[in-house]
Image (tube, rainbow, N blue to C red):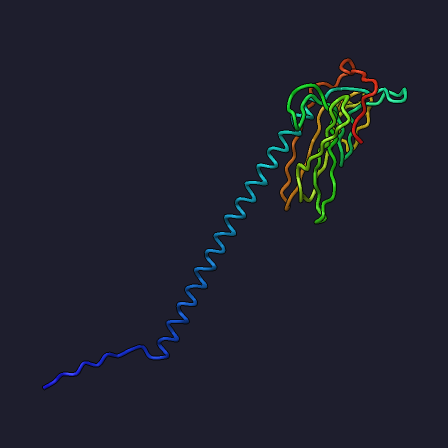
Length: 210
């Protein structure tokens, strides 16, 4: 007696179910990979931003802390090279953003709007007795960038923070740079080394960058 063996294949319904399950698995795997890729990119952007902030704050600290109490003699008037507002700061320093230590340069920081409606911090430098100016963007896409200045008058001993500094007879005791991004605020307070009346040096023909 001959025995028959029947081999049963996949039905169309089973094949469709298998294809559907495979498609779902592929969608899940693709989603996980995209999420992982975005997480890596986000982490890299955060690391890059933190490093840029750290480098910028270190540079600003070095330049502001080594500010020189210079006055210019343009037009017969004595004007301090150091002047500041909430959105700008001009100073003379021995620390250059491009060449590091050596000599002195005039630096001008400016808070400027960028294309996205946020704020950028730029720095311009001019070496003494040289006409060439150099400019760099230090920070971009911030919600707020602000300078403020701490000083004391002849009457008050407590002192106070100010939004402007245009005193031609002395430098502020401290400069604060505040930056805000996505509700995260960071403030750097920088004490100045020289600020007394005896420290001032007159430089004929040397002016801050405008």
